[in-house]
Image (cartoon, rainbow, N blue to C red):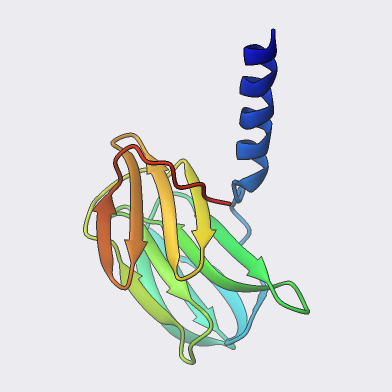
Length: 143
């Protein structure tokens, strides 16, 4: 019984750390300005304050947001595209765009300092300073 309780408690704690995915096209408040996604042909255009900073192919818009700060602005965002996830860092002006080197469908995302930890069908990965690393079992707790 104690083991079952601890398992349930761990699962509940883990689930609350996950940043939910969104399909909101905007406008979204970021430190770089007002973010908007617009459907163009078979993909999307990402704009900040009406200036285009990225284009990507995707059937649907899906993103995971790192929200924080005084006005709940989106500091970073992981966007699911046809060619794999793309990280937007709105703490830079213009926003920093980093494309991951692997195609994957992201299920969950954790924001930990300057790294992004994500779960896909192939397992868990960390993206930090432009490098994607497959994670092995560890005792590190992400929240």
